[in-house]
Image (cartoon, rainbow over all chains, first blue to last red; front, side):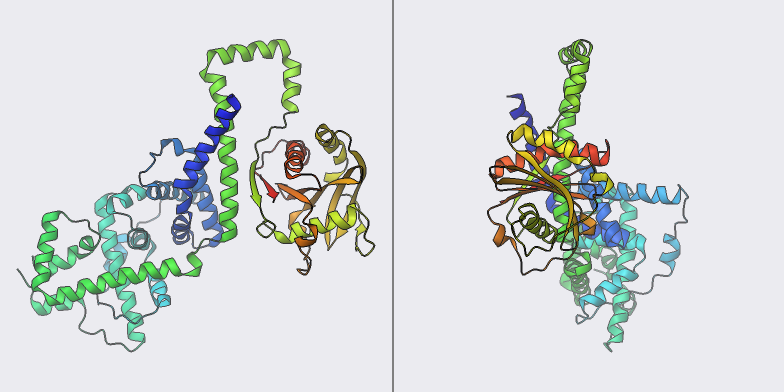
Length: 199
Length: 291
């Protein structure tokens, strides 16, 4: 009887985990690829994340946002790996420096390819890129991203704003390469032209 | 709200992150401002294009093999974890269990230890596959072919040659036989050798009773040869196969017994072979059974 109860409990844990967590493995892999830039390392990170998730699954409340919970674990694991590699050396936060070089914000013509979009997102500095991906690709809310990355919500918002700006700007470069006219479509220019339209 | 304010919060609006009141301000501004309507459409389009580009890009797709292996690995871990949790519960959570454990330790120490060492209940996740789904079909095909042409030794066309037994597999029959005979009492060791089939070395243990044969085949899965696809499982449909891996060694148990008994033999072999091949290191594996 004990054996069958034990077996039932074993199966229950796996069934719950399989049902709640495993469907997110493809999403986790996408995020891992953006973090690691290498398939093998991304797979390793996904495996480690799900392994940690499995071990801590008793802390997860069934029916809540499992994807956000697992992504938080993934980021913690990733940060741990980085800390291990860099032996706790603090690196200079280049965010402000990058922000100063963010160009103007043109709008984007429609007929650019997926390949152009992918190349453009690759050119967004990592600090901004990962947040743009978490928000615009993976669909996390600002609050969830703040929790996942363990940074204040204001930082999430400002990085998102800057990241998207860089992305639009990069996309505009591709548009120009196709000979598409993007002149005069810069938000800032438009605002200047309108003299800051008020309602 | 002016256009500058609007452009600052437009992304938050699209992410549905604004307060209801601010949402109303945005909508009111959009009603009056054609330029901002254009801008919001562009930003919506950039998001949508980014999402679809990333989701559809091959480089961001998770691999099927990786997913399968991940699933198997985690399932196995889940079962192992529950095992240790149960042990922990009885060891620390229950005074009765602790007392019983102490009494047993002091009175039956030797027998208890002996019993533990012979524990064959290593948790093995079990997955059932059809022939077409069996992972690493290539190696499985070779093992199947080797079982037929080498163990049975009835087919003179077989291109099997004998090779030296790798050191790690030496005397492994002494480990395996007691386990096999616990289940198949009257089966006797027919032969134990190492052979090469389709450029793949196998260490091959064969037990037999009344012309019924069970093969245990061990090979380094990283050194498997290539298999000609014109030969497939269809010719071997009458056999049962179970497989587990210990580090780089793939172990196949193939027989013409029923699936349940064939799997039972494989399970009984798993823990003793693991201890022999890998010391006391723990490897995660799963039992893969052919349907």
